[in-house]
Amino acid sequence: MAELKIAHLYPEVLNLYGDRGNVICLKKRLSWRGISCTADKICLGEKKSLAGYDLLFIGGGQDFEQEVLLEDLRSGKGDEIRAAVEDGKTFLCICGGYQMMGHYYETIEGVKCEFLGAIDFYTKGGKERMIGNYAFHTGKDSGDCDVIGFENHSGRTILGSGVEPLGRILKGFGNNGEDGTEGVRYRNVFGSYSHGPILPKNPVFCDFLIRTALERKYGSFDLDPLDDGFENKAHDAVLKSVLDGTAGKEE
Ligand code: GLN
Image (cartoon, rainbow, N blue to C red; front, side, top):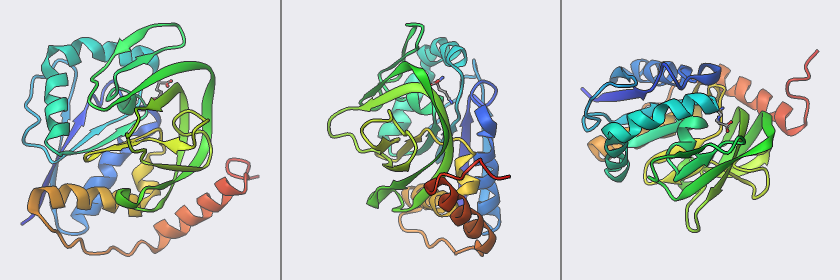
């Protein structure tokens, strides 16, 4: 029987806006299909090889929480994460967890967090926070779907030349509020500013992520469809409200 092993990195430090809901959603959509799934929490200070995992999740965090990670990343976990990235393992990295994959994040106070440099981009904090419901469309090789979410970040991310964004903004800020990009796609790493959590709100993107991880592990994989009638209705209603500017203004 097919199995997917999930690693949830830094769950005790990086879990803004219930980002751990992404792991719950992955487990649920796998179990509904009879696909075995384990999810291990890997916390600060825990020495554990990541080689045996198929999908790795890192949530979002406040500036000071990201600073807390630095020592742990330098203690060897950073090397493990970089190796897993280059090995084509599937990652979902949200906001602070996304920023951590780049060269650095310089906070608005001028604290420069030297991060992994696993992907060629950097982030600089800005005075105005980028907050709100938003929507973007993912690239052709990243699910080619509309994604809704909630963003709240000071960081402006600038992708290196030739680095592919996860998608293009339909409404909202995204990476920096200027170049119309959102997130990053590098090998099988998917980075996004999308809290929400992103996966329960976007079943098509969630299944794309699951398929990516299973195909890397088993070659091709035929993922049975689920009855997402309600999920898609909710998704489409929120997408409409984000695009017409009424999201969050419901009476
Ligand atoms: N602290 C980072 C920023 O403000 C990330 C925030 C987050 O994870 N929501 O940009």
